[in-house]
Length: 310
Image (cartoon, rainbow, N blue to C red):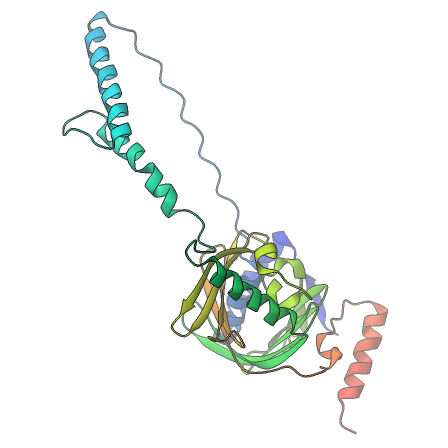
């Protein structure tokens, strides 16, 4: 019987500890799981405001310096308006900052769709949506590259909506299965599994029956790179914070070649895809998860019997 451990927001630290001392291949899967579900860290306490120092008693001789300071402030305001400051003027740093604020705001403006090429970016997003929405099944190979550069391969199987399976190559005994409701991380060697809520994963572009990238995620960039098309996204609904996602397509937007996830703590996991096929059907039992109920146990026995050689 497969042991069951349900993962919730507060227990992901335990998941990290469970996978941390494992072999390198298992540790890589642990990094992938962290990239999917986020690392749950305790938020840093907000710094307490320092008590205000008592104001010094006013002195009569301070009247003239105060007037000078007021004059300097007026000069700073005038300089901020004109965009120039005379050398040696007090509060010049603040005036410089004010003078450059419009430029900073312009640089930091959202770059989801470049104003000079709105049609191109919109067209590429529409093509990406069409690619994912036309995909009902998918099989292929993947190569996972962790933040430390280590690689581990495996097989990918998808059946929308919500069903996904990663089978890792040996020596890893782990497999990741989504059944449309939950995601199970199984250890075939230890006969255990850990359960996550499917909504915690940022892989919405693969799991949802219909996806609109601009509506369901936040588009931060659309670019034509030398090797193809790159679409950068953010998912603020991921457990632990915002996950950043980059999707890489070929130049004709016919094949998804890889995705790259940066989790809320900045760890990057890349998954490269190859040999992608769209079969008409896939075996539904590949996405079965045993929750420990009587009907689940009966279903698991049927699956095991069907897999035995005649």
